[in-house]
Image 1 (cartoon, rainbow, N blue to C red):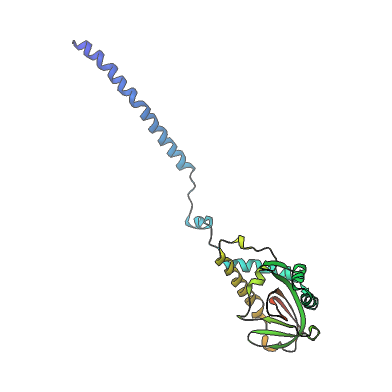
Image 2 (cartoon, rainbow, N blue to C red):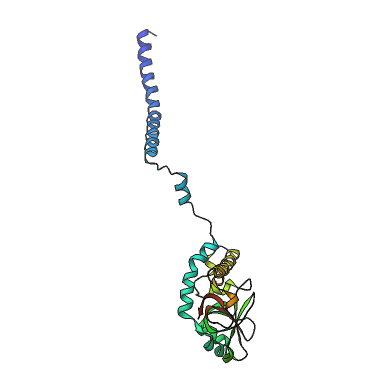
Length: 225
């Protein structure tokens, strides 16, 4: 083969080699361009901004503190007086629950109530109200560890089990409402001077408790005089 023929054969081969590499070069160039564009459009966040955007874990304490004012407003606006509630309970507890309260499940109801009376006695656990017109019924207000946050949680009928991830969280909300009521209501009382004083108690009552007794889980207590 002559030198001329060899050169004429090598030229197309080189062109073919360059042509076969061209798509790879173009793809690489496009990739680099995309990376540059992505980098230019990327918003870099500070650690503080990342914290703000990260969902916070649920806090029962914060939830109760946020909702307690709403529950107070609901109870004070919708409370049935114990002088009206007790006769209704004595006649038909289930009908009274349906009329005045919300269904809490298992045949029980939670009712917003109020009572105005003179304090008959106070101990470390309860305030006992003097209510002679209610005959054998006792009206008691828990003020310590005897308090129960579940009626407070349930009284509006707007807080449901399905709002939370599990039973444990749902129960923790009850405990948080108990703590909130202790801090916002009971802690502000001078319990040592309450005996013989007239007060008005607003709170939540759950049916199904001891017969002849109304336990008012307090959300607001007004001291008169």
